[in-house]
Amino acid sequence: AGFSDSFGIASYWRCTAQSASSSHKMVASKMMVAKEAIPLLTPHKIGRFELSHRVVLAPLTRCRSYTNVPQPHAALYYSQRATEGGLLVAEATGVSATAQGYPETPGVWTQQQVDAWKPIVDAVHRKGAFFFCQLSHVGRVSTNDFQPDGQAPISSTDKQITPDAESGMVYSKPRQLQTEEIPLIVDDFRRAARNAIESGFDGVEIHGAHGYLLEQFMKDSSNDRTDEYGGNLENRCRFAVEVIDAIVHEIGADRVGIRLSPFVDYMDCFDSDPHALGMYMVQQLNKHQGFVYCHMVEPRMAIVDGRSQIPHGLLPFRKSFNGTFIAAGGYDREEGNKVVADGYADLVAYGRIFYLSG
Image (cartoon, rainbow, N blue to C red):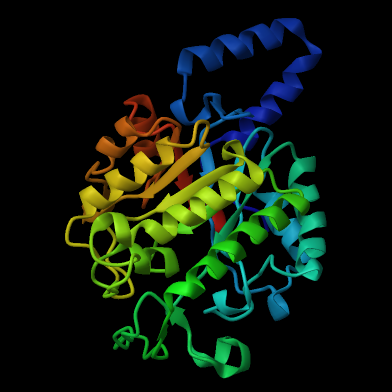
C-alpha cells in the first residue's frame, strides 16, 4: 500500500492532468488553486532544484536492507512516496562497515551497495521527484554484534550510553577514536558522498543529529576529549565541519544538505548551550556558497488537547542560514502550512504520515 494523500499533493496533480484537455477547465482550475493558495503546495527553488511543493519525505530507518544492501522492493516504497517536483530523503545510509547500529540498514560504501541503489533512485526520478541520500554513522549507538570482527563501536568518548530501562537495550562500551584516526572517518564520509552521486542521487544529507557520531563530537555531554576535537565549541564541531568541507569539495555545495538537532537530548547526547551550538554550525554552513539546505529538528513538542504544539525554537537559525531551511518535528498539515506562510521554514519534513505500510 502507498501513503495516504494527507496533503492533497497527488490529488492536485491528478486534477491538473485531467483539466489539460480543456482550456476552460484549466483556467478555472488555476484560478481555484491561486484563490485557495495552500502554502505547502506552493513551488520553491532549492539550489538547482525546482520543487513543485514544500512537503519533504523525512529520512525513515526501515531495517529491510539485508546484509546492508538496498533491496529491490525499496524502489516501490520510495516511488510510492514520490511526486512530481517533490523532495525525498533516503533512510540513514552507512558510510562504512563501522557505521551500523541497527539490523539490516543500508550502506553506500561498497560497489554492490552503489549498484543496488541505482534502480531505486531511477524509480524515484521516473516519478519526477528529487532524491537525497542521508549519510550516517551511528558512532556509539551500536553494539559489538554490528561491528566488524566484533570490535567496539567508535565514538568521541569511551563513555557507554545509559541502558534503556524501557526497552532493555544495552549499547556496547565504545572506543574513543584516536586523533589520527579521525581524518579516516572524514574520508569515509567523502567517499560515501561520491558513491551516492554515482548511484544517481541528486545530493546528500549529512546526518548530524539524534545522538549519532557527528553529534557525539559536537555536544559537550558526550565529548570529553582533550585534543583539538574536544573542549570548546569550535573544537567540538571541528569533526563535523571537516566532514562538511570534505563532502562539499568532493561533490559541490549545491548537492549537500545537513540535518541537525542541537536541542534534542537523545542517547545521552545533549549540550549545555544548544542555541550557541546551532548558531555556530549555521555560520559554518554559510561559508559554503550555495550550500543547499539546513534541516533542523524542533527543540521539543508538547501535547495539548491531543495535538502536537510546536514551540518555534528554530527561527533564529532560519533567519541566519543563507540557504533553504527545512523544519521537522511532529508537524501536521495545519501547522506545516502555518510555518511556511509565516516564513518560519521554507520546507517541512514529514515522517509518520508517509510511513504507512513501510
